[in-house]
Image (cartoon, rainbow, N blue to C red):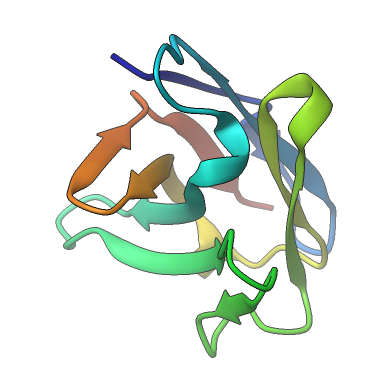
Length: 119
């Protein structure tokens, strides 16, 4: 059972930056490098929405339109950790951020980390 733990959330002002981490563990018959890694977020009263993905095949990146150019997804295979660098944060970026690891039909989610952007 793959276990994901997000960290790095916090309260910041508009225009500031945060870097979220997603530490993965529990690999038995698989490896971290075999998983597509994604970030999602959920604001109060809203549905969970896609933020960014980094695919294992070809290293392709995907971003939601409203974060492209401000957010960067990356991963460190040696540390079994994915990251989300968030720059020029806006109030609408506030929410709980979740990471997801996916390999075929297997999909794992972390418990989330809170990001609050407010002046």
